[in-house]
Structure formats: structure tokens, C-alpha cells
Length: 231
Image 1 (cartoon, rainbow, N blue to C red):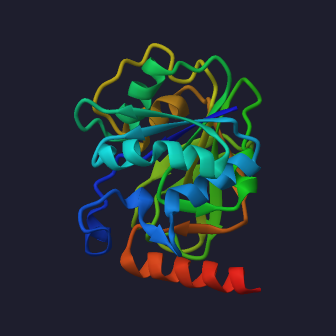
Image 2: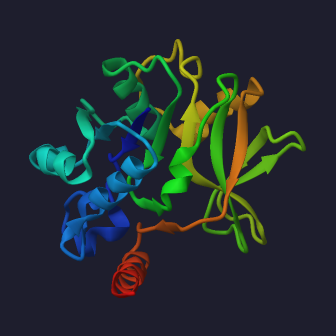
């Protein structure tokens, strides 16, 4: 199975740590964060990964061979000709590496247990991974029908417990058929189109879910991974 990893973000909130570099390769105990993520994909049975890059893609290009060897995965790098957003980055990568079977899409700045990446489509509906949290305020949350189909993506700011978007998807080959590469958002443009067709359902997940997008979150992840290594 193939996975497309979105690595194009500017990492504005992590600038004091990355010093203007690629946030996906920020150092975690001597290794780039992206390598840890790629190893999780390998464990989950992924054999080929396409890195969708924009900002500081040169860093990924330089590290590509080492990342491939370190994770034991076949890697390809697709570089945006100009900023395309999360949705456009995927569409651009699909044009260069078309998918003829269900495929994963995920963000490069979120750490989840490898079980999260065993997400599979039934071939009819595409799937989004949902995480139950005590407070949804920091995340985009999901409104879901009784049969599991997603009814609406809610913006950040909704408070209280609920199901939030973990940023991991398994799309059918037909999900993006006919979509041309263009600047667009996964959450604001591509997913609502699937929801309107009643073609997106949720699978819930209860494992590790860490967004390293802020200095505090990254520091907490480093501390927790260091403790795990010592046990």
C-alpha cells in the first residue's frame, strides 16, 4: 500500500526550533522526526511513500536516501512548483504518482501509533481517522451520522468532548478522480466534496496522538519518547 505524506507546511509556530528549516525533519534525540513517522508506516505494512513537499524541499531531497534506508521504505519526493495548500499538494503528487488502489494520506507533523496507519477503505467509501478528545478547542472536529458517515467538518473552537480529525485518510482511487492540481485545502475543499457525496466515513482511534507543531508540544513529545526509550 502507498502513503502520501504532506510535508509542505511553513512550520511558523516552530520557527524558534527549526530556525527556518523543514519542521518534518526537526531533531528528536538525534534523528529527524519524519524518520520516526516513516518507521511507523513501515510497521503498519506500507511499502511505498510519496513525500509531498514545498517549503524547504531541498532539505528532504538531501536526506531522501538516508530516510529511505533508515525506514526500510521506497521513497519518492514530489516538489510543488508553488505553494498549493494541503489539498493541492496531494493532487499534484497524484498527478505524478497516480494511485490505482486505496492509499493513505497523512500529515508529517503528527505522531500516531502504527495501528493508526492500518486504516483501510472498503473500496466504496473513503475513510478518515477520528480521535475522541476531552476538549476539541484546538482541533477541527467531526459531526458523524449513526451509520459512521461524516456529515460535517467543524472548525477549531468548538469546546467540550468530541471526535476530532487526526489528519489521516484512506482514499479510494475514485475519490480524487477528475480533480486537477490547483491551490486548495484538504479540509475546506476536498473533504467537503466527499461528504456531499456521502462517500466519507469515520474510523475511531484511541492510541497515541501527538501534534508536534508548537515548541511546547515538541518538547513534550521528546520527553515522552525519551522515557519510553529508557523503559
